[in-house]
Amino acid sequence: MKAFITASLDPKGLARLEKRMGTHIEDWKQTKNIHFDGAAFAKRINDEGCDVLIVEADFIQRDLLEATQLKMIGSCRGDPVNVDLKAATEKAIPVFFTPARNAEAVADLTLCFMLTLARHVYDAVSFVKGKRDRIEKASDFLTMYEAMMGVELYGRTVGIVGFGAIGQRVAKRVLAFGARALAYDPFVKDEVFRELGAERGDLDTVLAQADFLTLHVPDAPQTKGLLGEREIGLLKDGVYFVNTGRAATVEEEPLYRACASGKVKAAAFDVFWREPVQPDDRFMVLPNVIGTPHIGGATHDVVVHQTTMICDCIDAWLEKRRPPFLANPDVLAVAR
Image (cartoon, rainbow, N blue to C red; front, top):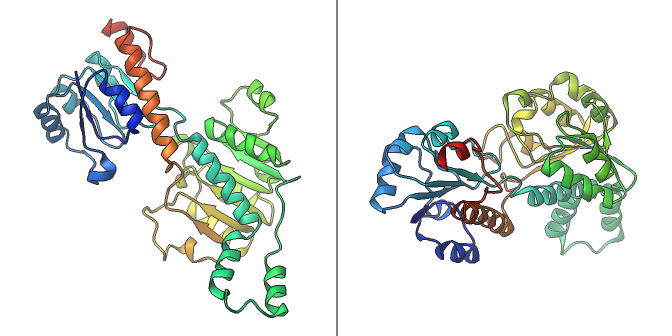
């Protein structure tokens, strides 16, 4: 067997995989290429004599599957929306994926955003870097000190919309700071809330009571525009707003007005309605908004997580065990 690999894999995991099969590597982060053309990609796979495919960003649709002899597919994503699962199942090809591979990383960034907003970290660092030769007079220090008075997470209510893998990890982090975790997710069982020490609330309650609001819902038709003008109107005046999930969860215009008016005291985004985000994006121009360019999952550890998960699945499949992260379980009925 031989694997055509365009996903990023860590060296130790790659060595583990190479004990099983040959490899051909074209890491998409190095080639800066995403395969959209199924026929062209299929030719590349066939030319290299590969029958295993491990991807992260490439699109694997029926035309590619029909033109290759793939035996396994690994999709290094939390949701393998880039793979035609129905076509893969029909051809008896198992599709492995990596749920929650970036959950710790995104939860870390979410907490980082909360603390940055609460303690004016961005403004404080900018002040020092811009005036490091001039912070000599007591008046300068007092001006800075008074302007950057912040708040603590301790005792505040953190509202979490979406209580899946990331939302649950955010709850653990803020609870450790002495905050109250109040979350909305109609699909998570009550015992999950109880085990974590988080409180359950309906969407309106979470929005109305949150001192900090953070969003962690998937990109799905039912979540688009989940927070519109009515919902944003329910927010406390002076709420801190964080979105490391999906921009489409929120209607852009009413959120912009809330940030510009000060109803939202400060906001932090890792996701935007237009990406890559530009410096002149109207949110980035606001003095109370900070942002990062969709880097929530950009850690070396995420690469290790996804490599381990895909290797675990490949090992299991070859050893005729059920893979732990199988996106198309119906394949078990047709492949064995």
